[in-house]
Length: 270
Image (cartoon, rainbow, N blue to C red; front, side, top):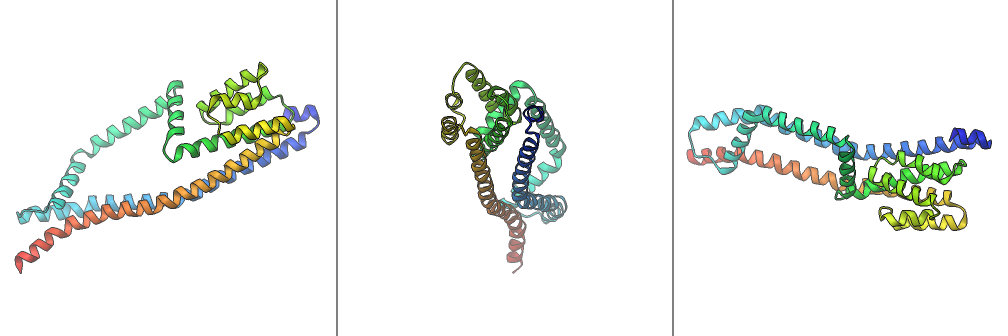
């Protein structure tokens, strides 16, 4: 882009567009991170509380109940079994989980693994559409800035596909680049893939007819950025109560399993 700006005498405008694009991308990233901060904090606190209970509270209670030599309620038996399993097989479980995670990480870095992982990211419930919008927004804004800098459409597509972050969509752009180099329109090339939403195709087609494709792509990127922000807020607003309910059920079950034998002992004494 800088090379094109120097050649066309528009270096100042090119740098301004780059700065604006970087600022918008940073703002979107910070908004997503900010929205996920509270649910992440709740998850860490909840897991810490549960680990503390299983590490320090339940072993002492289990020892006390076993010494009483009484028949225990099924929630207590289940809790004691879970605690015993975790203590006996924790390291084996940790090694297996760590091995699986490492294997998935290395596999996802291979060509085939990366493609399967990227396909999965686009098909995930709730998050699949969000990942698609983020990738298309990044691609559309980069393509608009590159086109406005005076680069050819083939060059801009080749450069833009490198910032998408998803090999599935990148391959579609690569196929569209080949089709465009043989005379096919931009909108028509993207429409064949079925990956890009209709609104993107319509905006690009309108831009091709009016000669303002850069503006159309920028509008697409702005719209998708707003959708991403709204979707993230909606997901976090659903995630927070779901986490509270889940943690409440787990802690409630633990408390119930501990209190039931105590109530039985009190009734026996009375």
